Amino acid sequence: MHLAQINIGRLLHPLDDARMADFVENLDAINSLAEASEGFVWRLKDETGNATSIAAYEDPAIIVNMSVWTGPEALFAFAYRTAHRRFVQRRKEWFQLFDAPYLALWWIAEGAVPTVAEGRQRLDHLARVGPTAHAFTFRKAFPPGAAEPLVPPDPAAGIAAEPYRSCG
Image 1 (cartoon, rainbow, N blue to C red):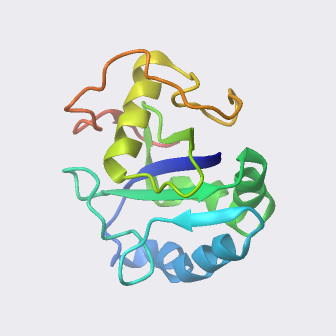
Image 2: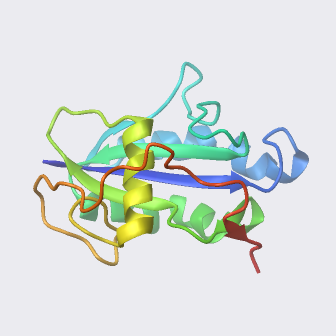
Image 3: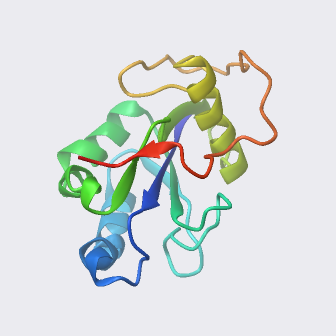
């Protein structure tokens, strides 16, 4: 089995705003670093090579990132032990803080590619139930295996207009 992940963020400013320049100018380098990392399998991207234009939510300020890894160790190593860590540490410069989960992990069959809709449902499940084998976090991980949701999917699952608080 492989590990799928989704993480979302609500931009503080449009991507073409000068305050977002350092984030935008480093997307290609960080994405290339991910693809070259041990354990990387797949990432969501469009014809430009990134996912910033993929509309996962009605709110155009919410951007999505999804990827697949051989396991949580590989994803964790990329996220927190490479140059990517510097950008995680600066996320408050570019993103509003959610009051709901913005990262969900789950196991998928090797060769499977998760959809944005599936990622949204996993985030919703995590928000409604907490970490389970169906959707979990680094802090509360579960071993590989398929897991059914504990609650039925909410067809309207998504981030509401204002479910966040200001960073700071």
